[in-house]
Image 1: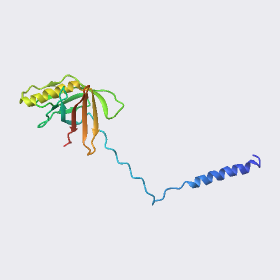
Image 2 (image 1 turned 45 degrees about the vertical axis):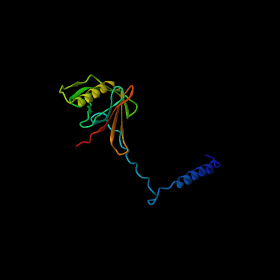
Image 3 (image 1 turned 45 degrees about the horizontal axis):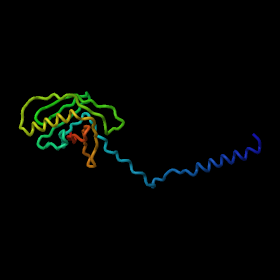
Length: 169
């Protein structure tokens, strides 16, 4: 090393030292950023009990779901089951791959149900519900601003049914 290069090296080292001293640790009195509140997670499609709160028939007309509404539960095993309005039902649920955690391809296989008869309006509800399952093409899970978990089932013509999660007991 030449004597001419020593001052240049000393200058570089002094500059690095000066820059390092410019970064100071935050004081204890400095305002700390508020921790991020965990966003309400998108509810799971599977292993959640869903209650139908809005149902549309094949013509897009609303179907009355009051009283004892239909339910849906999709298990991790790919089986869907629930209450259709009068009878219990079961079918295969095929969940496709999706790049979104909220929207996913979904279809149901043929519905098998018990065969009890009920009042005409309840039987109409059950027919509309099971027919709707056959038309489903995708599902969207979301969480409302009040924290309630929601599920929307859609067919090629649009929204077929809306559900809310049944609170765990």
